[in-house]
View (cartoon, rainbow, N blue to C red):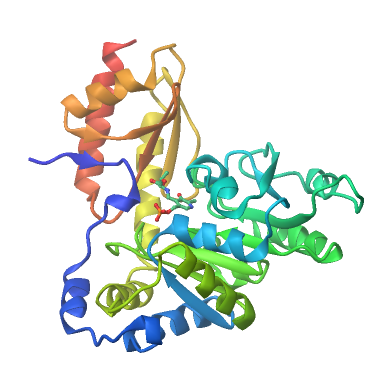
Length: 343
Ligand code: TLP
C-alpha cells in the first residue's frame, strides 16, 4: 500500500479525462499566439474572473513574480502580509527579479489590519520609496487555508483606490475560497487588479497557473514572462488539462474541505495538539508537548502518512482529490497512534 499523501494538494495527479484531453489537444506555437488551446484557456480564465485578458504561466510562483514585475519598478516598495507566499516561499524573487523591497505587515490569521495598510503607504517625498503594489492572498496558505472575507477584500480595495495603488491577489486557491464563500470566484477577483490562480493544486492539473487582469496589464505581463524564460510553444498539451479543470474540478473542492473538517474533528480531541478549525483544505496543527514537528513527521511516515510542517512546532495537512475518505480514516488512526508515543 502506498503512502497517504497529505503534504500538499500539489501532489494531485491528472485525471483520466485530462490525460485524454492532452492526447487530443490542438496545438500551435504560442510564441506566435497560435496555440488555440492556450488561447481558449486564457480567454476562459479571464471570463471566469471577469477580467479582460489572461496569461498562461508555468507555475504560481511565475504568475506572482510576473505580476510584481509588471506592476513595479526597481527601488519601489510593495505591501504584503509577513507570511504571504510571495514573501515567504518564492526564493527572494521580489528583490532578485523585480528589485523591489517589501513592507511587511504581520496579519492576524492572514488578514493585515486595514489601518496598518493605510499607515504603510509611503508619503510622497525625496527620501521615500514609492508604494507601488498591495498583495493579498486568498486563501491564505500559512494561515491554514484561511478565506479572506469579501467585505475585507472590498475594504482594502477601496483604500487602494484612494491612493491609486493596484492590488495583486495571490489566488493560488481562489476556488477553494469561492466554494467556501458560495460565491463565483469573480466576486472575489472584483477586488483585485490582477489575480493569479493555480491549476496544479486542488484542481489536479500536472502544472500551470493563470494570471488575469486588464488587456494592457497582460500585454506587459507577457513581455515579463518572456524575460523570465517563460515563453511557451505547443503548450496546448498542458493547457488542455486546465480547460477540463475549470469545467469539472471546481465544485468538487467542497469534498476536500469536508475531508479537512473530518480530520479536524478528530485531531481536536488529542490533547497534545492544538488544531485550528479549517475553512478549506489546509489544517494547521500546533504541537503542545514541546516535541519538534520533524519527529512527528518521521513517525507518520514510518506508519504510511506524509505531511509537512509550517515551522518547528506546527504541522500541516492538506486534503485533496487523491486521498479518499477511507484514507482520511486511516490517517486519523496513524495520527492517534503516533500521538500516543509522545503523551
Ligand atoms: N504552495 C506550495 C508550497 O510552495 C508551499 C504548497 O504546497 O502549498 N501561492 C500560494 C498561496 C501557494 O500556496 C503556492 C504554492 C504558490 C503561490 C506557488 O505555486 P507554485 O508551486 O505553482 O509555484
